[in-house]
Amino acid sequence: MAVRSDVLALFEAHLQQSGLARNSVAGYLRDLRCFSRWLAERAGQERPPDGFSSSDVEAYKQYLSATLGRSPASINRYLQSVRKFGRFVVMAGLWDSNPAQGVRLLEGSGVATLRALTESAIEQLLKIAEERRSRNAVRDYAMLQLLLQTGVRASEMVDLRLADLDLDEEGGTLTVCAQGKRLGRRIPLNRATRRALDAHLAQPRPAEASHLFLTREGRPLSIRSVQQVVASLGKAAGLDVSARVLRDTYARSLWQDTRDLHLLTERLGHRRPEAALRYISPPSAEGSSTEVFERPSPSASR
Image 1 (spheres, rainbow, N blue to C red):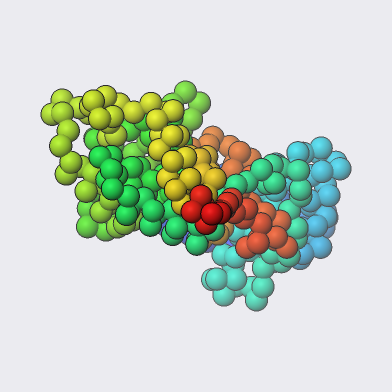
Image 2 (cartoon, rainbow, N blue to C red):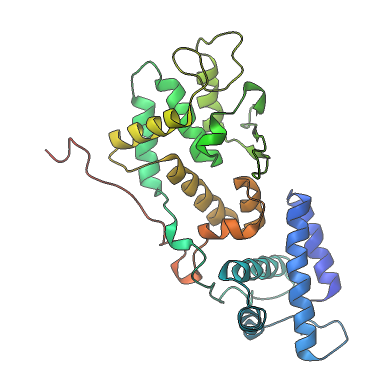
Protein backbone atom coordinates (compact mmCIF):
# COMPACT_ATOMS: atom_id res chain seq x y z
CA MET A 1 0.00 0.00 0.00
CA ALA A 2 0.98 3.66 -0.32
CA VAL A 3 -0.51 7.11 0.11
CA ARG A 4 -3.50 8.10 -2.00
CA SER A 5 -3.08 11.27 -4.03
CA ASP A 6 -6.30 12.80 -2.66
CA VAL A 7 -5.05 12.36 0.92
CA LEU A 8 -1.74 13.95 -0.05
CA ALA A 9 -3.69 16.90 -1.47
CA LEU A 10 -5.49 17.30 1.86
CA PHE A 11 -2.14 17.16 3.65
CA GLU A 12 -0.74 19.84 1.35
CA ALA A 13 -3.71 22.12 2.09
CA HIS A 14 -3.21 21.52 5.83
CA LEU A 15 0.47 22.48 5.62
CA GLN A 16 -0.30 25.65 3.69
CA GLN A 17 -2.95 26.66 6.20
CA SER A 18 -0.44 26.11 9.01
CA GLY A 19 1.55 29.11 7.81
CA LEU A 20 4.69 27.20 6.85
CA ALA A 21 7.02 28.69 4.28
CA ARG A 22 6.71 27.45 0.71
CA ASN A 23 10.02 25.58 0.91
CA SER A 24 8.92 23.77 4.07
CA VAL A 25 5.65 22.65 2.48
CA ALA A 26 7.56 21.49 -0.59
CA GLY A 27 10.01 19.57 1.63
CA TYR A 28 7.29 17.62 3.43
CA LEU A 29 5.51 16.79 0.17
CA ARG A 30 8.75 15.73 -1.53
CA ASP A 31 9.55 13.34 1.32
CA LEU A 32 6.01 11.90 1.32
CA ARG A 33 6.01 11.36 -2.45
CA CYS A 34 9.33 9.54 -2.28
CA PHE A 35 7.90 7.32 0.44
CA SER A 36 4.70 6.76 -1.53
CA ARG A 37 6.57 5.77 -4.71
CA TRP A 38 8.65 3.29 -2.72
CA LEU A 39 5.51 1.81 -1.17
CA ALA A 40 3.84 1.40 -4.57
CA GLU A 41 6.93 -0.27 -6.03
CA ARG A 42 7.22 -2.54 -2.99
CA ALA A 43 3.59 -3.63 -3.33
CA GLY A 44 3.91 -3.99 -7.11
CA GLN A 45 0.67 -2.24 -7.87
CA GLU A 46 -0.37 0.58 -10.13
CA ARG A 47 -3.65 1.59 -8.48
CA PRO A 48 -3.67 4.32 -5.80
CA PRO A 49 -3.25 2.36 -2.54
CA ASP A 50 -5.04 3.10 0.73
CA GLY A 51 -2.31 3.56 3.37
CA PHE A 52 0.68 1.98 5.05
CA SER A 53 1.65 0.11 8.21
CA SER A 54 4.38 0.45 10.83
CA SER A 55 6.18 -2.50 9.21
CA ASP A 56 6.24 -0.52 5.95
CA VAL A 57 7.90 2.40 7.73
CA GLU A 58 10.46 0.08 9.35
CA ALA A 59 11.22 -1.47 5.95
CA TYR A 60 11.57 1.98 4.39
CA LYS A 61 14.04 2.96 7.09
CA GLN A 62 16.12 -0.11 6.24
CA TYR A 63 15.85 0.65 2.52
CA LEU A 64 17.13 4.20 3.01
CA SER A 65 20.04 2.95 5.09
CA ALA A 66 21.10 -0.33 3.47
CA THR A 67 20.13 0.27 -0.18
CA LEU A 68 20.53 4.01 -0.64
CA GLY A 69 23.20 4.57 2.01
CA ARG A 70 21.51 7.63 3.49
CA SER A 71 22.96 9.18 6.65
CA PRO A 72 21.10 8.87 9.98
CA ALA A 73 20.22 12.58 9.76
CA SER A 74 18.65 12.17 6.31
CA ILE A 75 16.78 9.03 7.31
CA ASN A 76 15.39 10.73 10.42
CA ARG A 77 14.22 13.63 8.29
CA TYR A 78 12.20 11.26 6.09
CA LEU A 79 10.79 9.52 9.15
CA GLN A 80 9.73 12.83 10.70
CA SER A 81 7.90 13.77 7.51
CA VAL A 82 6.05 10.46 7.52
CA ARG A 83 5.23 10.92 11.21
CA LYS A 84 3.80 14.37 10.58
CA PHE A 85 1.63 13.00 7.80
CA GLY A 86 0.45 10.23 10.11
CA ARG A 87 -0.49 12.74 12.81
CA PHE A 88 -2.45 14.73 10.23
CA VAL A 89 -4.56 11.80 8.99
CA VAL A 90 -5.36 10.80 12.58
CA MET A 91 -6.32 14.38 13.43
CA ALA A 92 -8.48 14.53 10.30
CA GLY A 93 -10.29 11.34 11.33
CA LEU A 94 -9.10 9.42 8.27
CA TRP A 95 -7.15 6.80 10.23
CA ASP A 96 -7.41 5.48 13.77
CA SER A 97 -3.70 5.56 14.57
CA ASN A 98 -0.38 6.85 13.27
CA PRO A 99 1.62 3.84 11.96
CA ALA A 100 4.87 5.84 11.96
CA GLN A 101 4.71 6.99 15.57
CA GLY A 102 6.28 3.88 17.09
CA VAL A 103 9.16 3.65 14.61
CA ARG A 104 12.37 4.67 16.34
CA LEU A 105 14.67 7.30 14.90
CA LEU A 106 18.25 6.36 14.19
CA GLU A 107 20.96 7.39 16.59
CA GLY A 108 24.10 9.11 15.45
CA SER A 109 22.55 12.35 14.15
CA GLY A 110 23.97 14.60 16.84
CA VAL A 111 21.13 14.35 19.36
CA ALA A 112 23.44 13.63 22.28
CA THR A 113 25.09 17.08 22.03
CA LEU A 114 21.87 18.88 22.92
CA ARG A 115 22.00 21.06 26.03
CA ALA A 116 18.71 22.53 27.19
CA LEU A 117 17.32 23.89 30.44
CA THR A 118 14.31 22.48 32.27
CA GLU A 119 11.27 24.63 33.04
CA SER A 120 12.38 25.08 36.65
CA ALA A 121 15.83 26.20 35.55
CA ILE A 122 14.30 28.69 33.08
CA GLU A 123 12.08 30.13 35.81
CA GLN A 124 15.05 30.40 38.15
CA LEU A 125 17.13 32.18 35.52
CA LEU A 126 14.39 34.66 34.59
CA LYS A 127 13.66 35.39 38.26
CA ILE A 128 17.30 36.24 38.94
CA ALA A 129 17.49 38.46 35.85
CA GLU A 130 14.22 40.26 36.64
CA GLU A 131 15.18 40.97 40.25
CA ARG A 132 18.72 42.08 39.49
CA ARG A 133 19.48 45.72 40.27
CA SER A 134 22.18 47.11 38.02
CA ARG A 135 22.54 49.79 35.37
CA ASN A 136 21.98 47.29 32.54
CA ALA A 137 19.44 45.06 34.33
CA VAL A 138 16.51 46.07 32.11
CA ARG A 139 18.55 45.53 28.94
CA ASP A 140 19.92 42.21 30.15
CA TYR A 141 16.47 40.90 31.05
CA ALA A 142 15.17 41.82 27.60
CA MET A 143 18.15 40.07 26.00
CA LEU A 144 17.53 36.94 28.07
CA GLN A 145 13.84 36.84 27.16
CA LEU A 146 14.64 37.31 23.48
CA LEU A 147 17.25 34.54 23.46
CA LEU A 148 14.90 32.13 25.22
CA GLN A 149 11.84 32.96 23.12
CA THR A 150 13.42 33.17 19.66
CA GLY A 151 16.56 31.01 19.72
CA VAL A 152 18.61 33.65 17.92
CA ARG A 153 22.36 33.21 17.89
CA ALA A 154 24.58 35.65 19.79
CA SER A 155 26.02 36.76 16.43
CA GLU A 156 22.49 37.52 15.22
CA MET A 157 21.50 39.34 18.40
CA VAL A 158 24.31 41.89 18.14
CA ASP A 159 23.14 42.76 14.61
CA LEU A 160 19.48 43.31 15.52
CA ARG A 161 18.12 46.77 14.73
CA LEU A 162 15.15 48.68 16.11
CA ALA A 163 13.50 48.30 12.71
CA ASP A 164 13.60 44.51 13.09
CA LEU A 165 10.91 44.69 15.78
CA ASP A 166 7.21 44.82 15.00
CA LEU A 167 5.47 44.86 18.39
CA ASP A 168 1.73 44.67 19.04
CA GLU A 169 -0.65 43.75 21.86
CA GLU A 170 -0.24 40.03 21.29
CA GLY A 171 3.55 40.23 21.21
CA GLY A 172 4.61 40.92 17.64
CA THR A 173 7.42 39.58 15.51
CA LEU A 174 11.19 39.77 15.23
CA THR A 175 12.86 39.81 11.82
CA VAL A 176 16.30 38.19 11.76
CA CYS A 177 18.24 39.18 8.65
CA ALA A 178 20.19 36.60 6.64
CA GLN A 179 23.88 36.21 7.46
CA GLY A 180 26.03 34.43 4.88
CA LYS A 181 24.63 30.91 4.56
CA ARG A 182 22.17 31.47 7.41
CA LEU A 183 18.62 32.19 6.34
CA GLY A 184 16.65 35.21 7.45
CA ARG A 185 13.32 34.63 9.16
CA ARG A 186 10.44 36.17 11.10
CA ILE A 187 9.85 34.81 14.59
CA PRO A 188 6.71 35.48 16.65
CA LEU A 189 7.15 37.07 20.08
CA ASN A 190 5.02 36.36 23.13
CA ARG A 191 3.67 38.98 25.52
CA ALA A 192 6.36 38.45 28.15
CA THR A 193 9.08 39.19 25.59
CA ARG A 194 7.19 42.22 24.30
CA ARG A 195 6.88 43.63 27.84
CA ALA A 196 10.60 43.11 28.43
CA LEU A 197 11.39 44.85 25.13
CA ASP A 198 8.99 47.71 25.90
CA ALA A 199 10.79 48.32 29.18
CA HIS A 200 14.17 48.18 27.45
CA LEU A 201 13.12 50.58 24.69
CA ALA A 202 11.86 53.06 27.32
CA GLN A 203 15.41 53.44 28.65
CA PRO A 204 17.47 56.48 27.54
CA ARG A 205 19.50 55.85 24.39
CA PRO A 206 21.35 57.93 21.75
CA ALA A 207 18.87 59.26 19.19
CA GLU A 208 21.04 58.12 16.28
CA ALA A 209 21.52 54.55 17.57
CA SER A 210 19.81 51.98 15.35
CA HIS A 211 20.98 48.77 17.06
CA LEU A 212 18.55 47.17 19.48
CA PHE A 213 21.07 46.44 22.23
CA LEU A 214 23.82 48.88 23.20
CA THR A 215 26.70 49.21 25.65
CA ARG A 216 26.72 51.88 28.34
CA GLU A 217 28.61 54.11 25.90
CA GLY A 218 25.88 53.71 23.27
CA ARG A 219 27.80 51.37 20.98
CA PRO A 220 26.49 48.04 19.59
CA LEU A 221 27.16 45.07 21.84
CA SER A 222 29.81 42.54 20.86
CA ILE A 223 29.23 38.79 20.73
CA ARG A 224 31.55 38.43 23.71
CA SER A 225 29.45 40.91 25.69
CA VAL A 226 26.30 38.89 25.02
CA GLN A 227 28.02 35.72 26.18
CA GLN A 228 29.29 37.47 29.31
CA VAL A 229 25.82 38.76 30.19
CA VAL A 230 24.28 35.29 29.80
CA ALA A 231 27.08 33.59 31.75
CA SER A 232 26.82 36.15 34.56
CA LEU A 233 23.06 35.67 34.90
CA GLY A 234 23.52 31.92 34.83
CA LYS A 235 26.17 32.01 37.53
CA ALA A 236 23.89 34.11 39.76
CA ALA A 237 21.16 31.52 39.26
CA GLY A 238 23.48 28.58 39.91
CA LEU A 239 23.34 27.45 36.28
CA ASP A 240 25.93 26.74 33.60
CA VAL A 241 24.38 28.75 30.75
CA SER A 242 25.49 30.13 27.39
CA ALA A 243 23.68 31.68 24.44
CA ARG A 244 23.97 28.27 22.76
CA VAL A 245 22.22 26.58 25.69
CA LEU A 246 19.37 29.11 25.42
CA ARG A 247 19.11 28.41 21.69
CA ASP A 248 18.98 24.67 22.42
CA THR A 249 16.30 25.34 25.02
CA TYR A 250 14.16 27.29 22.55
CA ALA A 251 14.57 24.63 19.89
CA ARG A 252 13.67 21.76 22.22
CA SER A 253 10.59 23.65 23.47
CA LEU A 254 9.43 24.43 19.92
CA TRP A 255 9.90 20.81 18.89
CA GLN A 256 7.99 19.47 21.90
CA ASP A 257 5.14 21.92 21.24
CA THR A 258 4.81 21.39 17.48
CA ARG A 259 6.63 18.19 16.41
CA ASP A 260 7.20 20.11 13.16
CA LEU A 261 10.68 19.53 11.74
CA HIS A 262 10.40 22.03 8.90
CA LEU A 263 9.05 24.77 11.18
CA LEU A 264 11.95 24.08 13.53
CA THR A 265 14.35 24.38 10.60
CA GLU A 266 12.81 27.71 9.56
CA ARG A 267 12.79 29.28 13.01
CA LEU A 268 16.42 28.35 13.65
CA GLY A 269 17.57 29.76 10.32
CA HIS A 270 18.89 26.48 8.90
CA ARG A 271 18.79 25.68 5.20
CA ARG A 272 18.34 21.92 5.56
CA PRO A 273 16.13 19.95 7.98
CA GLU A 274 19.06 17.65 8.76
CA ALA A 275 20.71 20.51 10.64
CA ALA A 276 17.73 20.71 13.01
CA LEU A 277 17.60 16.99 13.76
CA ARG A 278 19.98 17.34 16.72
CA TYR A 279 17.04 18.73 18.70
CA ILE A 280 14.97 15.58 18.21
CA SER A 281 15.29 12.53 20.46
CA PRO A 282 14.30 8.94 19.70
CA PRO A 283 10.68 8.25 20.81
CA SER A 284 11.67 6.27 23.87
CA ALA A 285 13.69 9.20 25.17
CA GLU A 286 11.35 12.06 24.34
CA GLY A 287 10.46 14.10 27.35
CA SER A 288 13.40 12.78 29.38
CA SER A 289 16.50 13.50 27.30
CA THR A 290 16.76 17.23 27.97
CA GLU A 291 19.95 17.82 29.89
CA VAL A 292 19.87 20.27 32.79
CA PHE A 293 23.02 22.10 33.76
CA GLU A 294 22.55 23.17 37.37
CA ARG A 295 25.22 23.56 39.96
CA PRO A 296 25.10 24.71 43.57
CA SER A 297 25.11 28.49 43.86
CA PRO A 298 27.97 30.02 45.90
CA SER A 299 25.59 30.80 48.76
CA ALA A 300 24.22 27.29 48.81
CA SER A 301 27.68 25.74 49.13
CA ARG A 302 28.59 27.67 52.24
